[in-house]
Amino acid sequence: GAVVSQHPSWVICKSGTSVKIECRSLDFQATTMFWYRQFPKQSLMLMATSNEGSKATYEQGVEKDKFLINHASLTLSTLTVTSAHPEDSSFYICSAPGQGSMNTEAFFGQGTRLTVV
Amino acid sequence: GNSVTQMEGPVTLSEEAFLTINCTYTATGYPSLFWYVQYPGEGLQLLLKATKADDKGSNKGFEATYRKETTSFHLEKGSVQVSDSAVYFCALKGLTGGGNKLTFGTGTQLKVEL
Image 1: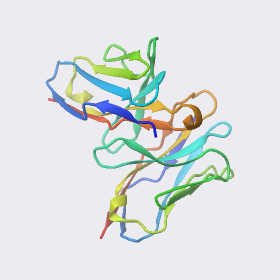
Image 2: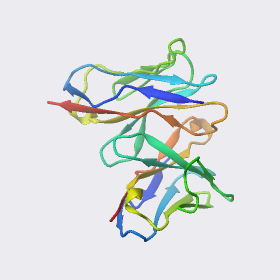
Image 3: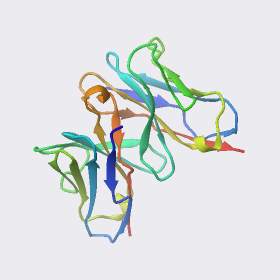
Image 4: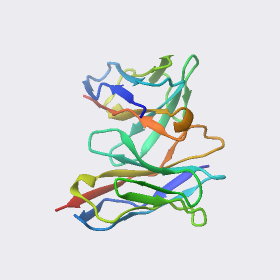
């Protein structure tokens, strides 16, 4: 099946620094990728939709300048948390929709645990 | 808009017990329905799905039936194992307005003990 690889799996950074998270589709092309944030013991909250070759679409309440998304190619989307603060600590997950016969599915990365100290 | 409601956890069961995790949804038209499983420290994995009414999704001993009349997609397993301990998410993908976006329930944590 389709594989989405997310890197790094965990990161600890100092308050005020920026962190980049990568999401790659390994064996298929993804014109769209989704970025979610998951708080402890809560569901996934969609942050934004990443579109290859155009600007990302952000959900209401998500700061565009805080969470920079770049969809540089058909296999790579990145999320950069800028000027991170402890409240940004969370589990971030990307996903890509399946194509063709698997278009009803979504494939998820392994997730990135961000801890801001 | 679309929404998914699932039972709160945590659910604690003994090994070989019967499992039911309730899930109901609100959506326009006929969405596709999914159960995802998240093991500790990992991302989500698709467990099973159903794309139309009365379809039954099944995988690894888990089953769920798409019930349009009750707008439900309850997850069941006849005999759980310790290795089934995880968080289970019910989700839907609508046919209109949402594109490929998934709407998730809040998740139900399952703990299976010996």
